[in-house]
Image (tube, rainbow, N blue to C red):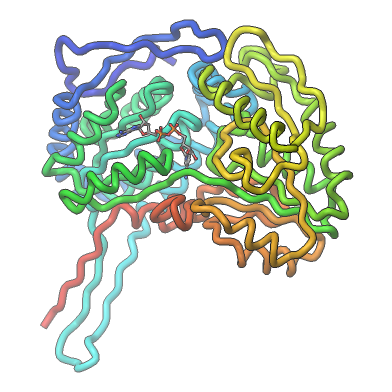
Length: 472
Ligand code: NAD
């Protein structure tokens, strides 16, 4: 793969640049243009100019571009995975899995692009026909986080383009290279200039505000923290911009006394340690029935201790570095606080490299319910375990959070597990499994974890406007 280049088109002259760092070593991987508000406006102009042509392009042709992008991403799995690993610190196996997941959004939405739904009917009084059809909402502003540098991009770009929208993508400053590489692939697969413009920046506030103030921008699709989501909802209100929000989580992982503990531990490892715990769907609180708590904790501690923490360049690494040293300090403080309040470590943490932002996975037991470790989004490889006796209590405690993204339930009695799952205020629930992400299923949160859904049929609707014609 050629070195990724900016697809800000044309690239404004005299632009500043910023450095992209490798979190395992702190070394500079590359530099990219640092967009400012003017570059954001220019990108929106470019997308606006391309919009009528792309919206009028036959769905079959749009579908072929997306299908071609899927094919090229799969062919280039190794190169893309290396790039993801380098800029985000993700272990190689996690990075390859991300490429497969990310590419799948192009395949799924290539299939959805040619299945636009609509309705035709007769008004109840018999005097008019009702024609309902979808239209692309317009230019979309897409804002993505660093933790899944490919999948968070493709989960927005693929449905936006499938619907006939053009888009401006502002990737996280930590991981712009994967976004630029995907934009290059999209263009190679036949997307016209202006269909997607990428604006890497260290000034996200300025650039996103410029996008939201631009007359052509009719949609904001944001993935990131709840705090920034709230801020952007306020800004979007000024022009009543249509918003989709994929925000933070605090997923409960409930283990019942009758759970298959091997399956629960296997699920817990995936739900907690995928991407070193830096996933919005990561299990954040392990709520384990007191009858099986000791056994579960011992098995989970053994599984955690067996994971190798190291640089992602090493193929034997299971867990790479966290995104930066600040994240390590923040999480260590959460653990120290919980231990100060009576919690204890279930095992000795594994050795980690001395340089780079590494943190060993850790099971922490007897965590007080109101400790920050249990109430805030950890975003790292730490598993706080709390015990329970009464089912109503544990459901109330699982729901006692402003978040409602993912949840997990383990019980051998599937009907009971499903019933518990249905009582959780979570947009997604894993029943006897530790992973919920699936491009063909609606991904998103309840409460302050978000608005709307990505993936499935819902994903394309987020980029469409419904129009009704009353025909005499
Ligand atoms: P973040 O909110 O700090 O940043 C997300 C994006 O917003 C980045 O592109 C960033 O540059 C941009 N941004 C930051 N400040 C901004 C501002 N003032 N105006 C406009 N844009 C701004 O989040 P993060 O640290 O990159 O990602 C971690 C968070 O994302 C976690 O809370 C995680 O749960 C959440 N997340 C949610 C999902 C989901 O699907 N629900 C998926 C992945 C991550």
